[in-house]
Image (tube, rainbow over all chains, first blue to last red):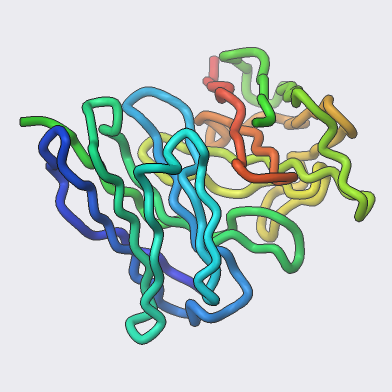
Length: 120
Length: 112
């Protein structure tokens, strides 16, 4: 069973860059999944940020496109999110998740989520 | 982007009674593979979302059979035949037809 664990700074200053890493255990990051980031602003719903395949192919939410980068490190079985020029509106719980496209199209595993606060 | 609209916003249900949640998409989610690319997730309090239903009507592994999904095209429904206390939380639909993937706004289910 795949397990995902987010890590990274919990506090980021306005105009700074948010950086998170998701460690994958119990499976290979080179498997046939898309590795994704989803966020949830306090008291709000879920927003898809983007995804990466083990080949390095990416898809991003156009609402964040110019500020977001997702990368993958196959040697360490992990993938990462960077979000630049952050504002208070980027304060959210950030989840990493695996997206299955084999048996269906769905998020099958999620990390526990990490709250990142943008504040000076 | 495909806009997903859920209703109602909240639901208060007596244990043992049924519950129904609606999800409507701004465009058809029926793919050329003949499946509707629509999932349902439950986010229990303090937890990450968990998959309930995929491709419109397929129950995920381990999901009780009191949960069922139906619908096609732009109109979908999640039904709980007999609500139990452990079913409380926020239910989200997700369109998985195209990126950006988009979620519904959520339906909060409480127990009376």
